[in-house]
Image 1 (cartoon, helix red, strand yellow):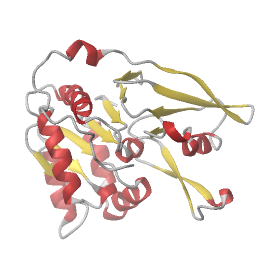
Image 2 (image 1 turned 135 degrees about the vertical axis):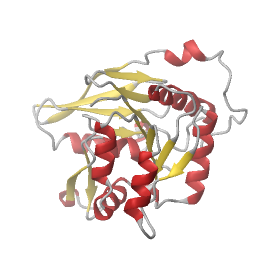
Image 3 (image 1 turned 180 degrees about the horizontal axis):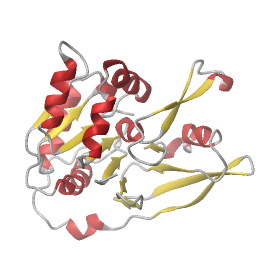
Image 4 (image 1 turned 60 degrees about the vertical axis):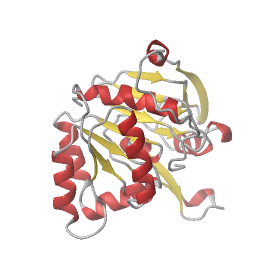
Length: 254
């Protein structure tokens, strides 16, 4: 890993101004003013409303051009590659984790994302996009049968397993996934206001809010010491450039 990754929780209860501040910190890792961003919307079906909403947030946070790296339509691969090649940052949208991963693999764009990451391009994930950047996630063939659960691989660019904005249900899916991991494997719950920064050396930081951590111990999943907010946002509150709109951010719910 040659560039940091930034994994935001997002979610229906997220505050727009707060999310914009997090995005501004993440965009700064590009090392330039107004970096061009490639928007990957595989998890949300390239939903136009989501794209407009996120593009507005990214622009408010200091991004330059925000261009769709399409996952659907004609000539997807060359258009996707072109958007990535022109970008200084790659953004992975929220939506449905499994559908997003299936689309990336079916269309053949997952290897292109890895190539850009290995070339040193910073990545930002939001909600499902954050989960997709990690190692793996879980799904059920039958929602009423625990025995139908299966674990599937994600992009694996971030050396973590995480869930986002699920603190209200006690991180039930994340705990279920943790129970299917080797002993002492840590998994992370990125709370609604938080962003997980993954440094190139693997060091983890919580920004904007706490991040919960769980481990499998003696066949039980237990909550262990998590990551406290590093406090970067408090040092930047007086800076200019925050959006006037402070309504809740209504982005993809997962």
